[in-house]
Length: 103
Image (cartoon, rainbow, N blue to C red; front, side, top):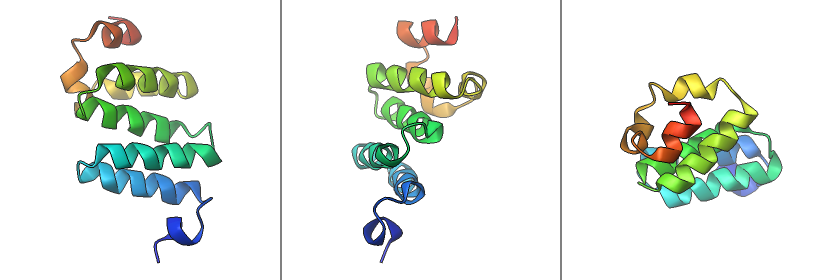
């Protein structure tokens, strides 16, 4: 049995489930898993960052920018990581993205 079924409060398992679903292109389910992970640890910056990646790949720019802003607030180092993260290529031209990145 997968760990998120037997121990639902294990935020790492929810995060891993989200990552696997995102790799399959099942972004809505991945985001739901990341949200579940955040229920157990609201300061889990990697789950917020990976949610932003999902939204960006899913072409939901507004949601991606909002989640990315939160991830950067939790961990400022993401601002540098975003520069080479292909997930955000489709929204780099968005005004909100440019403003968040200081462009």
